[in-house]
Length: 132
Image 1 (cartoon, rainbow, N blue to C red):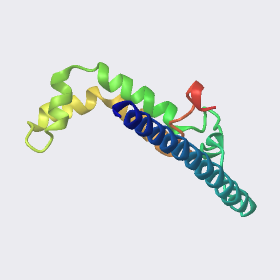
Image 2 (image 1 turned 180 degrees about the vertical axis):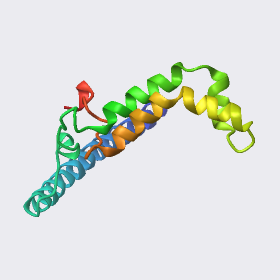
Image 3 (image 1 turned 180 degrees about the horizontal axis):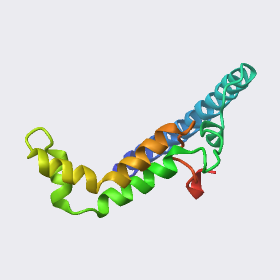
């Protein structure tokens, strides 16, 4: 009696699993078809569907402000902590100490100003290898 009941439960669970797997396959197939139709429609109006298409075109280094901004950031991080703290608290800092700290950062500021004059800025260049 107990074995017969266990066989029926096992059969019911197995049947339910088969039905669920088949339903998942059908839903996946229909979803794929719907997605493909939407992608075709999106491409027809000029939409971008590839990851590489989402990145801006490469910019020559002499026109890319990010090149100078990276240099400025690297240089700013190499300056003494006390100068960076004075600039961070510029509202309450001693005016002469602030002037000295800004003077010490003159190359950083020059790089930032030069970068601001460049026509484009692409931080993703060069692109990470897994996104090309």
